[in-house]
Length: 339
Image (cartoon, rainbow, N blue to C red):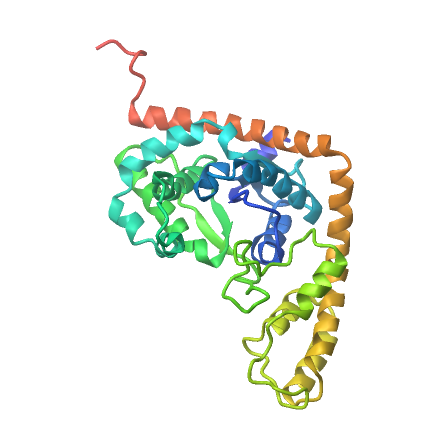
């Protein structure tokens, strides 16, 4: 069994623990992870080092670690197939980050478009030093298990290229320790929020959570943004860029129904109310088994704890192997050799 796992290519991917997970996480990442865990040696990381923007709410971070693990189990991630890893419980992450920071010029970080956009979100608030170093930690996270593939959202692709560049520099200057990982974007690269904003986000209050009760999901769908140019149900409507139809495409398995709604919407033969009602029905049908599995695990949190402990211990062993290779490449065995 161990030999077979070692022969598999490795995957590292993760989520910051800032709250429960939503449909955007599922469409952009989790759906992909569930399929990949069967054929790859997977490490699913809860990145609790990377929540410096929640430094004033550590209780939320702690609770969110459990929320993330519950949602992972609820969507079908199997802790026997893929390791559930708590980042801060593996001290090697911090050590590797320090060494890798030698090979990452500040200019590369400053040009990272994702980091630039996140900086703007801080506005006039003080920006912690940890915010500038978290991209280096992400590089360390990916390279620690010597990952070959990194499933990410579309907005995270610049981080993958950063990781590839650091791996190239290290391998070229010392020894070929790290693979150059490839990014893998999910079926729905980015799911817009219920308000039509470019991205579903906890902070924008435009998310439908995987654990939301059916009544809450229905209420959120009723308030969804649609086609602003359509004043009456008899007006021809636009499908393109319409969040309600984006969600139908992503989550309504009844393709015939979706195509019928689109055809009638374009010619003004169906109103937003019916389109939203059918979306709410489809979403709740999709979420029902997820909510049921989550409830079973919530009733037995020992299973969740065991999954986190098992996966973190497994990842720690790999981290120790990687750091032995890194120290050897850097020739850091100071006390092993006489001068």
